[in-house]
Length: 363
Image 1 (cartoon, rainbow, N blue to C red):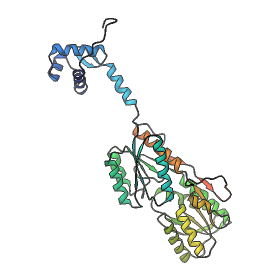
Image 2 (cartoon, helix red, strand yellow; image 1 turned 90 degrees about the vertical axis):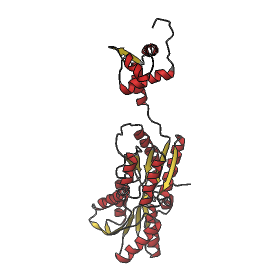
Image 3 (cartoon, rainbow, N blue to C red; image 1 turned 120 degrees about the vertical axis):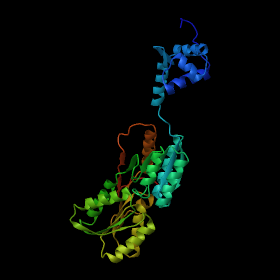
């Protein structure tokens, strides 16, 4: 093109037709293009030359191919991250204060980033949660944040989601097949309350565990607790029974343990609702038994006692869990490489001597 001359711009529709034809079927001569796009060669020649001038086509050995400008544009487009605008959130049970706080935190972080959030409550029902996952995928969410009812049982629904192109980030508890997991370091949480209980009962005694459902967070807390007690050979775990993470279940299971397992010198409840149920059972039996827990809820923190009852809880941070979970989900849908598929958040031991702790559900 001569200096100072205005570039020739072909009719947009025909130019697009030519570029699309070459992009799909590869380089072609003028005669081949004429047959493909059904244009006379005289008209097509002007279009192709204008596209060559704009670096949208190249001419080599009698064949027209895609030009450098098209390649650069495609590369630039490929580098643009996909912005997350709609996410689905599936939680175990909104009767539990932790999940309420988790959802509130997700909504707050998402709102600040202009992300729409769809919330589903499984009510501790695996089948219901699987249906909710399928439904959210069908509704077109870009990613799922999943606090699963059953870490292994939910695997099939997770696989269907990922097969549909919707990544899954597990929150709070692991989920089989998830793209990534963001959770408290639950092994550390169980270990820290285990050591605190062991010290509180003088390194000897009979201890009971009120366990929970089949999720990784619960299993990890118990594993950490049991591991910590191995340093105290005079402490014996005399009972380990499962509940469903609720206060009512904690009370029922603790009553059974107290009735069937002989004297108990200490309890570990896998979360605060469970431990508050244990506390109720211990009090109604007229006993003073130290109890340790995990969560850091406002109710538990307010009831902490130095000598008996609830003596410690390992606090989680649902707000940070929400922030990191959304960030990881955004990275996954953008195709960014994750530095790690597992993000562990540090727990904090809360005892009656800690005076600067603000519970995550404080109002």
